[in-house]
Image 1 (cartoon, rainbow, N blue to C red):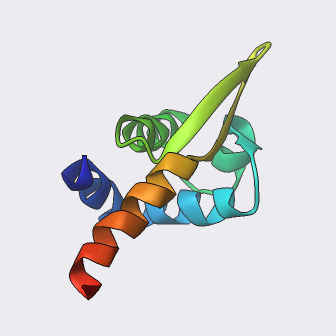
Image 2 (image 1 turned 180 degrees about the horizontal axis):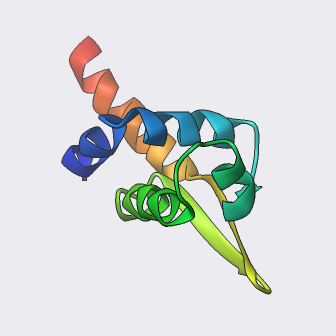
Length: 85
């Protein structure tokens, strides 16, 4: 799982999506508005972040809302702590 996370973090667009989600839950449309790339490209970035279990998605009618995964944050803290011991 850590490898998927690191791979996902390699892309500046995905890092920016994570920064955006730090401020709270956002719809896919709200996320896409912040970038100068196509909606399908944003969808692909969000899919990769979900596959890496870095974000969670919930559906509300026709909208999908994304938020940071608390499990991801805890996993990263644990993994990084291994290097500080």
